[in-house]
Length: 97
Image 1 (tube, helix red, strand yellow):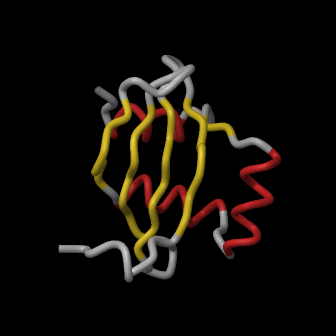
Image 2: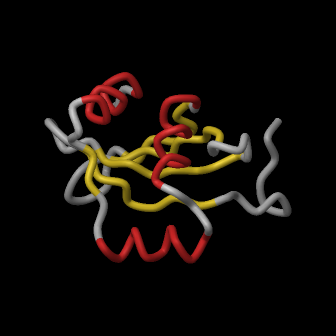
Image 3: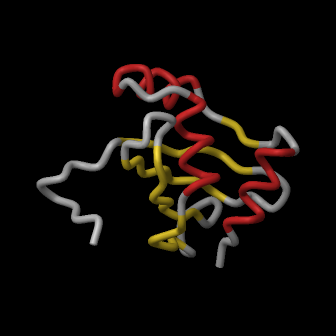
C-alpha cells in the first residue's frame, strides 16, 4: 500500500515527475503545479490501485491552492513518484461526504 507521507517526502526531495502530456492537460483544466502539490499535502488517499502497471498508484483527494476539491493520481515508483493525472471532481458524480 502506498503511504501518503512517502509521496510527500518525494515532493520534498524534488522526486515527483510529470509528463509533457499531463502538464498540457493540467493547463487545459486550469490546474497549476502548486494546486497539485497543495492537494498532496492537504489530502488523504481515498483509493489504492496496487495492481496498476508499471507501478502501484493511488487517488488523493485534497484541496487546490484556492481551497477547491482536487483529485490527484500518483504512482509510487520506489524512490520517486509520477503525477498520472489531476482533475477537479465533477460534483454530479462525486460527493464529499
